[in-house]
Image: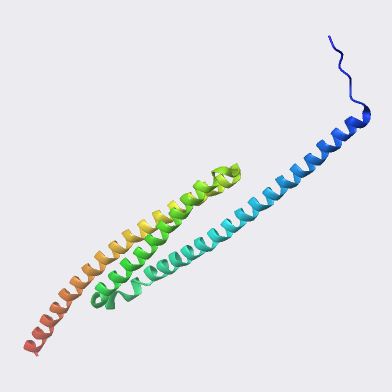
Length: 176
């Protein structure tokens, strides 16, 4: 059996220096990748914050308009068709925005599978928010339909009161 000759101390030092050099290069490459991933995550987060801010502002505008409906019941009878058309248009815009947000979330989800678990958790939270917003939009549609029915009912009642007032006026004129 041939005996193995052990490398001398300087050969080990050379090998060790090469290993240390390779480790430093690997650490630098990993750090550069980490910085790039963090930058991309920050960019995505910033973009999504802006989109959700826009959606929240649009929702706040819609809620403010629906709250103001109670004070304007009398004039809404004549303008009901126009208002319903504007509400439908707003709902379509919100639906398109919601579809765009859902599509963006799906795209982000596909791209983020290679990222770490913390980014996946953040995307799941965003999906829950989008679903909650969708539920709120559905609730707002229901409220609009309820308000529309109530306005129609009030218009019928107002017309009946108007006829009764005419009859009372006619009776007063006869008795006078």
